Image 1 (tube, rainbow, N blue to C red):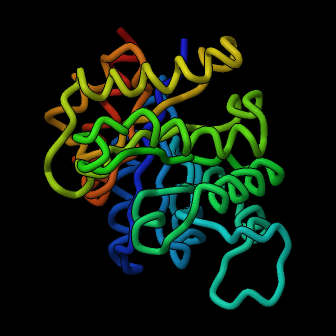
Image 2 (cartoon, one colour; image 1 turned 45 degrees about the vertical axis):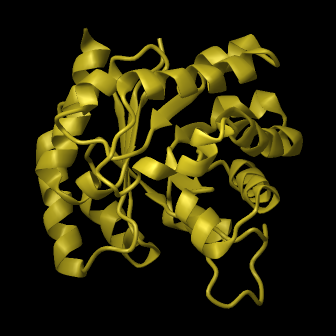
Length: 256
């Protein structure tokens, strides 16, 4: 059985005081949740603080992005994988829809970043998903397949044992609109089936999170779906009570 994984993407939010308050709340409320994996991904400036404050807890820490270049060098403003390794980060979010849409990251660039993270032993949380236009035009599956194919071509399907996939319907991110459990399950099953056609054993093991306006009131129904293995949580991860409630929903499913 796959172990559910809930990760919080704090995006560009935070201050030293806010991070401390949030970490204290998370540490208190999640320490008994041993049936699931939990992580938070703060802005890079607060990674060190989060790692220090969450020490001894069940919550691990990740980053939101890395440079495409594997080695350090003259890349002003970038963060290398070696820096994350030095900070003892466990995860890094790659290919988030905001990176794709706002900053123009391509499938090839994202695949390169996945390869860099894997080489360093840091787990990529690799995001895939479609826009509302792509869903309504009937191209959703081809869009997601293309995003997956870029990484498969770069690192091979076997490496997906070390990759977390996060399905994020772009039309449901930050909008308050959530894919129905049935809609989400359909896409998760498509992703797993695509991998299974290449390597069934890997497909059975890969963690596929759902990311798209997950809240305490819908988490349990989403996580109960056969191919949904937790969530990549945005806005709700900025509130310790809400994030802990979502983690508890995953814990309850895992314990059932």
